[in-house]
Image (tube, rainbow, N blue to C red; front, side, top):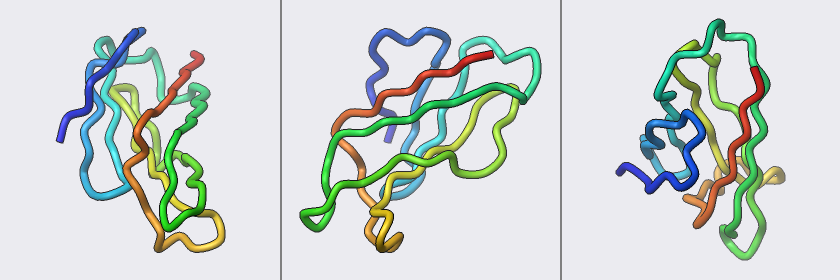
Length: 88
């Protein structure tokens, strides 16, 4: 499932690859894979909040994110809103 991207700022797409997991793709590649990423989310799973994490190794063309409960990583969720900031 491809999520709607608002105020994209070089984000071409956010595609859900599984429950709680997404791949973010840049419109224009970054000059290197060494950039800073901040991820936030809004939503709950099993009445507990989830936290966004970087999933895997970032590349020049994008990166993966995951949302799950910090006390039980088996509790994953598709947050209703995701905030992403990337700093090169």
